[in-house]
Amino acid sequence: MARSTAIFINGGAGRVVCSIPALEKFHEENPDDNFLVVCEGGSDFFKGHPVLHAKAYDHWHKNLFEDKLKDMNMLSPEPYRVWEYYNQKCSLSQAYDIAINNQGVRDLPKPTIKLSKGELMRASTVIKEVREKTEREKIIVIQPFGKGIIEEGGMLTDFSGRSIEPTNLVNMVKALSKNYGIIFMGEIAIDFKEHGVDRPIAVPKGTDLRTWTALIAEADYFVGCDSVGQHLAYATGIPSTVVIGSTFPINTSYPNCESFNIMDMGELSRVYSPIRVTVDEFSDRVNEGIMQMNDKIETHIVEEIDKHLGE
Image (cartoon, rainbow, N blue to C red; front, top):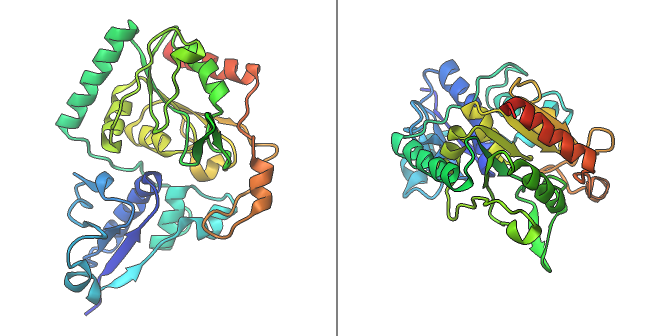
């Protein structure tokens, strides 16, 4: 009798979300494999999924090895080590599909994230409050910073070249807040009032990622960088502007999605950084500061958002 498979998914929430289409394909194409998903990066985004909810186990689940894993084959897909990924031939979701299903580069559906009525109702209440306090009908969620952002000496810096520069962020928020309500998504917040933004900016505290998914789903637009928010916007069908720097859009975002506007800051000077393969000081040095925008780029982003939202 063939052994079933335990598929280990690790890393941040963006990686977890991007693994969902490949796991769905595995279920479709291996009907006799009673597989499990071992969630080293958390199981939140599998909650409510029609297939994966019952198959997902947090890696700390009591007696998981003895009760489940001991008699299973184990698969640990690492999308960053897939040839098509590090040669810019596929997306993160497609790299997971190659690593798990070995069917080459193929089209995949959007990740399935099932939000509960309660999650959507709470998000709707927050959106309503933001509309009332800002006196603006249309709402934009902005996630400017990735995991690499650090605060030191009162300054915010991302040496990985993935986050929007704080100065650029403030300038864009000043412009956008004239017409829209703004919700700031991030663990490290900025005091926008101190930086001359005279309209209220919503900065929710202690918000988990499922609630953020619902907030993005209930908003009118999303602005972000190479981080989890853009994957949530893609999964929920929300139009977005995504600013990409040290990473390649084909790998980390959705350049072929009609509702996504990609601002590629690194197109002419970026060097691939072999994350999770090796440490490459040269690429990190080349890519440092790659997200810095000038006035024209800031204005272009704001104008594109205005165009989409009809302002």
